[in-house]
Image (cartoon, rainbow, N blue to C red; front, side, top):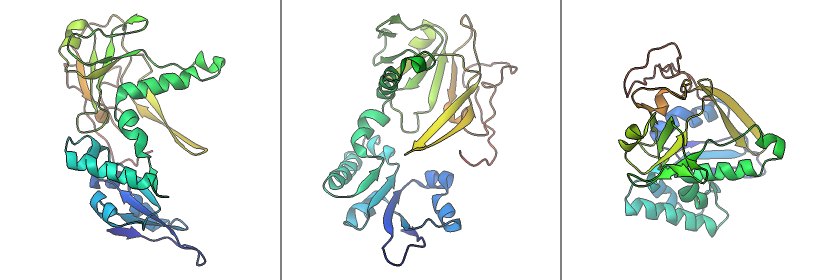
Length: 270
């Protein structure tokens, strides 16, 4: 396993952290490169895979992971390994970042995410609720299901996303403008009313009391009566830092579906 040691104080051992990241995710985060350049105090990082971690006993205090793919692989052995890790963490002082107990029900499914955001907004003070809202949404599980919430049918255009929020197809989005285009999509999916937002989104990251926000490009505004073909795109090709897409440029002519592209320079992630 790869290992990066910190300059721990001599009178106490460092915290041993197991890192479970894919090669692609490590290339993006550059965690070990950053630690070598600026070693954190009192922490030692170890790059492992899940099998190595399960065989290592109780050596590690913290597991920093992104193992969504194990849960969405449809391989029983992969799911069993993740649940074994969860059981071992519950019976020990091992800290999992993020905890696995909410991963399957919350982080992996977009409808649960929308419901959680609605609960958060509902718990906000009244003045804030006047400014913050969750666009109306509905879960479409089968072809022909009504696309509606408790207030009735959702209004076009609709941004449609796979219900599963992890995996290779999770970032494949469709913007549809009528019922015929919606019927061409394959459920299960979450349909959400598209709200004009000036072709930009603000991503907010919270760690304890620290809050970090960055602006990313997004899909351009559309008129409510826009008539055109459905637009299919990958959010990775539109909303990553440095992306340039005609979907974000109000002056660019729209083509047919699959028009989004990305010309990302080597920009460090926010």
